Amino acid sequence: MFGFLKQVGDYTRDAVDAARNLAQGFSVTFDHMKRRPVTVQYPYEKLIPSERYRGRIHYEFDKCIACEVCVRVCPINLPVVDYVMNKATKKKELRNYSIDFGVCIFCGNCVEYCPTNCLSMTEEYELSAFDRHSLNYDNVALGRLPTSVTTDPSVQPLRELAYLPAGEIDPHGVANDRPRAGQLPSEVLKTLTPPAKAAAKNEGQSSGDAKESDA
Ligand code: SF4
Ligand code: SF4
Image (cartoon, rainbow, N blue to C red):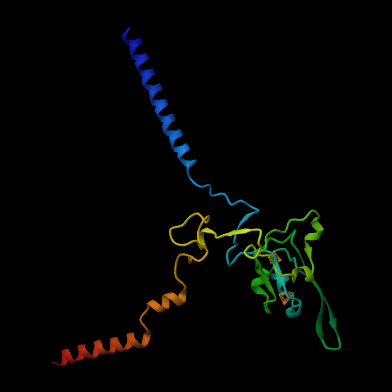
């Protein structure tokens, strides 16, 4: 009899515990409903790509010397450098240059090693196309200026976490004029003692020490 009553008591206690845990879980879950969603509402809101973002490659035909370094450092030898050798001038004459963005892995090697800086990476990432062959950009398409989320009037640009002011973790509602966290090197320099003053100070201290030791 007592065993049965103990079982009923245990069962009741477990049921009450379970109900309490359930209520706690729901209270935490409902608490989240009061917070502002962190969703970036693409395509009306877009995050601004970072400064070192490796997007679509930009190419300047006039700067290219057809050296093919970009091809050699590319993991898949992707850029197609189309040139002819001018026997009279003994110089390469560039005809065409193309990169297939259906194959490119956007590693930035070609940009890093180009000796004339005619390649650069842009912040453009919306490259989807219905026909994969249209991803093969020739020098005209590569030379087009990139689209920018900050100049598109139909887009609300939002800053990424690393560009938010100190203490902010959600880009929504952060005023544009608030600077990002941290200091620029020029601002750090202003806080440092100028080297001339520091040297004079050290000199004064050392001569003072010398006088003391003489005495
Ligand atoms: S970004 Fe990388 S994969 Fe793309 S063309 Fe340049 S080196 Fe090749
Ligand atoms: S490395 Fe630069 S200069 Fe040389 S072929 Fe490639 S794009 Fe042209």
